[in-house]
Image 1 (cartoon, rainbow, N blue to C red):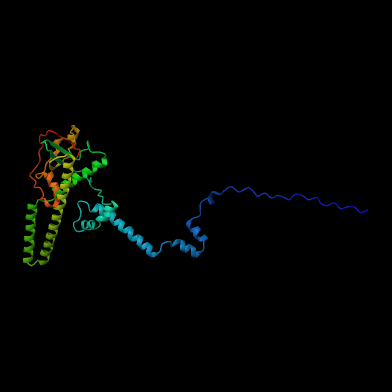
Image 2 (image 1 turned 45 degrees about the vertical axis):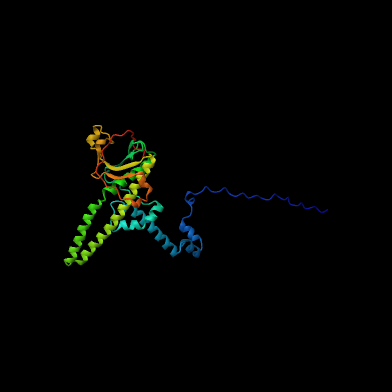
Length: 307
């Protein structure tokens, strides 16, 4: 009798478990460097990754950056006091870009020592005879601070343009002296030097006429705004300088806005207008003739600041 062979008992398939992951090595956690990443790709692709910009692109970007840097530098350099033959002509050329990019800033207006401040005083006569005496800038009535800063810059500009520009009579005398000096140099055998001096004289005369035109337009626009704001019939604009008190005066309790620190130049009045003057084109009126310092006057109505 044959014995039956037993079939071997099948065991369930062995399951293999992966060993637990090794703790991360702190030295391998850092991402691969740029060089390692470049080595991992093909050499052709590595070269392509490095040279992203073509030569003409790099040249164009470099030129644009240099132009932007020039604009950034020429802005502060072109502010007073600027070079007549270098920064001023360059600044005049790039002025449209300066205005478009808002880059014509100067950063030395309080350096190295703060100087005196300058004010514009105005006296407005209304139709009933009452007078309004005002001043700007005035921190008590002009706010927010940004608006005060705009009036502050306007007063400084009006004073600087007026104080640094000679009167037509003074300029005519200086111009005649320079013309005579250039003629004498040419007659004395120094034609080259005389020609150069004559060219400077002609250039200064053109700049002076342009400056007069700019001052006239600025003073007129300021007067027109103020006379319309206060519904006046006549307006007189004058400038004054507020000096800085000495430390001993400040320690004794002197107020910075005390009128004792106000100084009036000899030609303090910079403009007189009537309301009818603004009905004509601004270039048809002759510039107002300064008559001297403006002293405080009695008035029935007074406003401090509030242009």
